[in-house]
Length: 296
Image 1 (cartoon, rainbow, N blue to C red):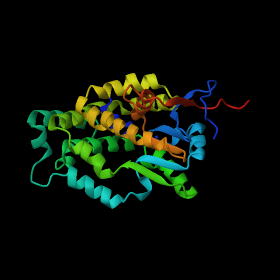
Image 2: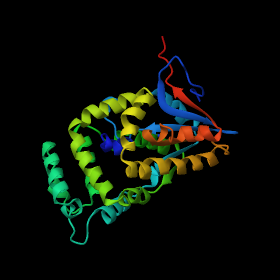
Image 3: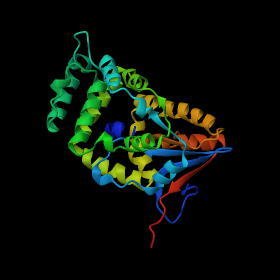
Image 4: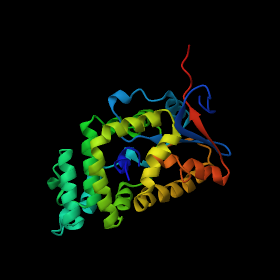
């Protein structure tokens, strides 16, 4: 029951064919009747040392007329987003995090928080899912991860400068509702797992980013996705159900004239319920792409 705290980091004209001489990347190309759709797995926060990104991403970006992300990043209103988090995640009726966790689990959470030097008391007026997300962001920030360096933000900056349209599958409020709609036991489990696993966060993130950069689907599946699947309710709400909705939307795009670059969290693209495999089962030609070998 580990790696649930990687929720944020995961939970998107040259390489038109996979180059078997270069290592794979966490990106797939889907062939439509008249167009191509690229599926890029994203790490939402990265560090400066994680750059440069694989060059295969540049080629897919150049080929695409439209970018689609989990949310429409260039039209996002930060104030509205923060208001939504507050409305859903901050307790307004006098209830506390201890009340929602229960004394025994709250004391366990306090003990785990002290180990990683997190003052959990400052989150006493939040719901467990919101506390878990806040802890994860704080811990990632401590070891140098920055959303401004994430794949989406980098691609958004390029698309804005180039005048390429950016669209989104979901709104921020919809994503918040996925978390807020989880049962209280699932939220408690989410918070405790996040606190207990954070001591090894740096090691876990190094493993994740190495697997992502090398397109190592096996590691992403067995090391990350399989662990998340043990949290059945969380996995269904944040991964499985969303994958199915997105696959249906992508199928509509495959009848278009424009080429699309779709950027979503990397774990949405691996495993039997991942978007590439869902599209394969429908009958589309889906190929994992590779990084071109270095020039000699």
